[in-house]
Image 1: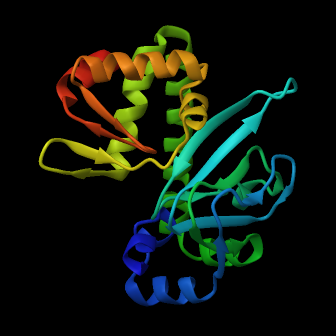
Image 2: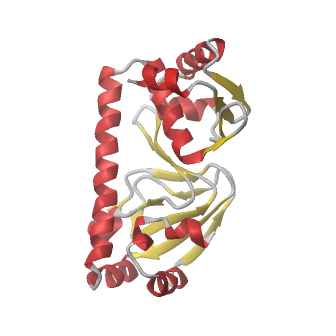
Length: 224
C-alpha cells in the first residue's frame, strides 16, 4: 500500500523519512463503491492520493448529461489545484470500487511545499500533465471518430490497470457500459457497437467490467 502511495508526485520528490512524516500527517478515508467523496461546486481545500481502488472524476451538464474526465487508481493524485487556488470543486469524485484514499489539507500542504521547491516542481509537473491530457481529449473529440476514441481509452486504461495474461492484457476497469461511454464522450449504443466490432475482429475479448486486449498493435493503429 505504502509503495503505491510513494509513486504519487507529492511523495516521489521526498526522501523516505520526509515521505513517512507526510504520510502520517494525512487523514485516511475509506469509501464504498458508488460513494461520493465530493461534488462539483463543493468547497475544495484538500489534495487526495488513491491508495487502493479506483475513483472517477466527472461533470454534469445543465441538461443532466454526464461526462467522465478521468479514472484514477492506486498512486494517482487529484485535487492538487487546491494548493494554488482553493475554491469550488470543478468535478465530482466518486468511488468506482471500495477505495482507500489519503487526504492532505491546504494548510498542511502549503507547509510541506513552501520549504521544498522539488515538491512544488513535482506538483506543477503533475498539473501540466493533466492540462496536456485535457488538450488531447479536446482534440480527440474534434478530430477522432468514436471507435478511435474507444481504442485510445482502452489502451490508456490498460497502461494503468492492465495485467499481462497468457492470451493478452487483462484490464479490470470496473466500469459499467454507461461509465465507459461517458469516459469516451459518446452514447452507450455507439460505444457498445465499437466494442462489438473490435471483439468480432479478434482485437479484444469483453468480460464483466473488464476487457482483455488481444491485439495491441491493431488497437494502437485504430487509436491514431
